[in-house]
Image (cartoon, rainbow, N blue to C red):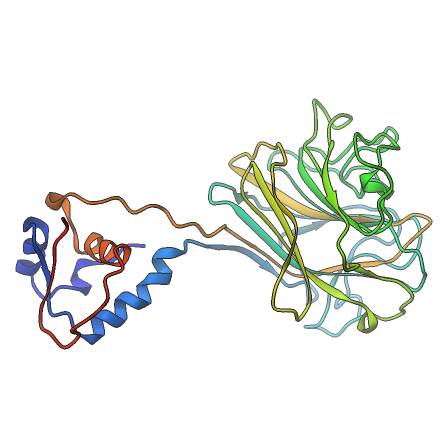
Length: 347
């Protein structure tokens, strides 16, 4: 953020004095300037940018690719008239067996400022045993991605001769049935069948037949799927937040829709990944003998807010913007707001 000197000085003489004098005088410093400094504080403290917002509530999803899938495939419920326009969802699977889907965003997102992903998630069905789950994955910006194995691999990892997600960097599984954590069907690592868990698998290996190793997982105290219901209105909806400030830290949080506070489920683990300058991402889901409706909406990607250190400027190059930043840093109170002058010693 650049602050023009002309916004805070009344003449070139004042600006020259601020640049050259060890004792910087900023005037007139009235209530309006004090208020401006207070308003600037959150802007200087946060550099968060919104990269993408996709609500999935309408009949189109610009720049999202719906790939060929088993079964009926993914759809927008407003487009198929299951929900009214403006209140739809991205439905990854219906409440039927042996389906798989892969929906990904076809533009790249930069990683240098960290990434935070948020979305609403609903998994529900009319049976007691639901499956299989939803996967959210980051993958290479190069090439054309192809989904991984179906069923317990959640479209991310390999499965019985089927390669994993091409270029996969990290996969987060919201695993209803529990096989994403199981070292079976060609998957590498994991404690075994873990229903209603959130698990993380790592990057593709030498090719998509290798890698995708189990990293960690957790079983939340609150179940994120809802069995024995026939309507979404009777299901629990959860808000998910995935934060990756840099490649050696990943956090997963969840809250029931409407709750004020997130619960941290996976806290700042090192996923042992390498983040390229740009990535793509997408959702996968599948069903087998156990099945459920699996849906997403209100998806957003932002950078991770970070406060960069403010260096101490030399008097020779001191600008009005640096002076204001240093005033904020030293937390000087805006006292004597009715005075025409205010002195500040950089020493």
